Length: 306
Image 1 (cartoon, rainbow, N blue to C red):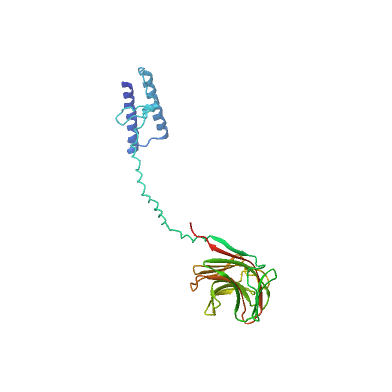
Image 2 (image 1 turned 90 degrees about the vertical axis):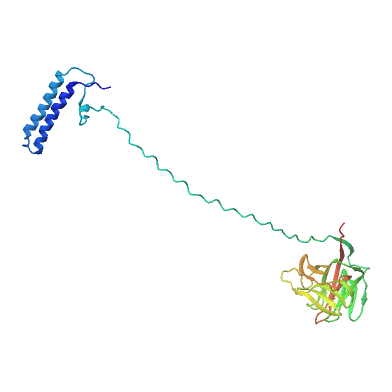
């Protein structure tokens, strides 16, 4: 709480009068000289000093800061009044975030069934012969020769464009035959292999390889040979000239498949004959005289499911 006295009021009246006098000089009265300005300043200071000495001690005393804080109505403002706070505008409202698109839904992959391959049939060995003696027919004519020689069973073919064969008496259906063969002599385009589904000398299947890398699966029907599939091996699976080849022939439910040294060479479907005897044979093309020795003859049959 501030206590007011009459002394400050009187001082304010005097100061106001002096200010008014100065204002008149500015508005049109005679301009004060440099000396008169100095007298004016001293007079104000003298009057203020006299008033201060004769003033009654009142608490609190206005200082120069208070004088400078007078309002036009003469009211003294508190010396250290804190200015009223400027009205703070409400913070700018943050715009709501834009709608973030939801992540695209990953499509559920459609279930695709994987085709399962037909399981490999189970085979049982039913006949085995090292072809060294005793179980195969031996014979000799001007056209052919069947004999045990060179550590195995040898067939010599002296007929051009034909096959000389030797077969077992037992009929087999859905058989797998394995045998090894090696050229002894004859033209380079001769061939040898396995016979299956043998009905008679004019009707059977032949699956074999040639001395020059040829391979083929043929159907002999009504004494005429027709090659269902043939070609020349470029992978080295067929060992040429006098090198030994391990052959495998499968005749199963009309599917004929030829292998050489554990490499599949050809496979065809044909149901002209579905059962018969099995055996081995040697063929010539344009030149006669091919001789091949066979070793390790084996027959497998499919196991029946339990």
